[in-house]
Amino acid sequence: MIAKASAPAKAILFGEHSVVYDEPAIAGAVNKRAFITIKDSDSDKSIFRAPDIGFEAELLTRQKKYILTKGKPGIIRYILESLHRVHDHSPIDITLSSNVPIGSGLGSSAAVTVATLAALYRYHNIRFNKSSLAHDAHMVEQAVQGVASPLDTLVSTYGGLVYLSRNKKVEHININFNVPFVVGYTTKHGNTGKMVKDVKNLKTRNPKIINPVITAMGNLTNYAKQALLKRDFNKVGELMNINHGFLDVLGVNTVELSRMVYAAREAGAIGSKTTGAGGGGSIIALCPGKVDEVAEAISRDDNILKVNFTRKGVSSRVYK
Ligand code: MEV
Image (tube, rainbow, N blue to C red; front, side):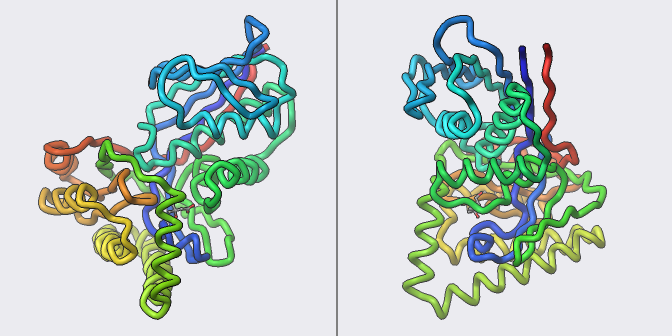
């Protein structure tokens, strides 16, 4: 039997970091996906392969360990944690292929986790729906990272634009959001767990300064929701720029991130900001009519990805 699943990567438009303190956030699924194929193993071993990133490992599912045969570890902890929750330890073969650059800040871990769990549920004929899948994928992310908001896994499961409210209610922003974005990313990867901890420490040391900033970031996200619903993209851009400033206050921006953000604005982006945890990773620039110019400007020093938001969430199938 072969089970296949794929899930989209996400970009956070508004609310990274403040979402950790229960402020609202908006993120959307992008047209870059992780694809997982699961089949019975040809041997008595379980193998995980990701040929696109030159990775191969033998999985010791009972011990939640692996023996690396090729490449650098990274995403494998999400695979092992997913297997640990669902799989019966029989030998299987898992292949990941992905057009989401790992460590680019586009939530490749959430896309891989959602696709892996969906494929495993299909493989074992376990009933699931999007709500249970998003919940389980969030549990996996939390177990691996120590801290994670449900945002990334929600978006990778449902697709589309998602608004997560202060009381963790999920709303789908149903607009036609076919606006071009450029993502810029550095080869220096951020560590989400460390960045979240650094912000927490900054907040503890300076509560009277940082607490109001976090509240303001939540208010900004609510303004952004209204601007999106009105399709007022100039306002969305303005709010992205303010959000970048707040992320600077929180100390998560780097020289490279700011270089990309300002290069994008100079080349005509109507808004640009760090997206994701920062400390490395990526920026997102809203650039209707200026995609090529913005991409060109960022790619002088860094890497780019042209993305669109998509309504397509997780999809899975089984072949007998
Ligand atoms: C990381 O993609 C977003 C953060 O807000 C952390 C989280 O929400 O888990 C920094």
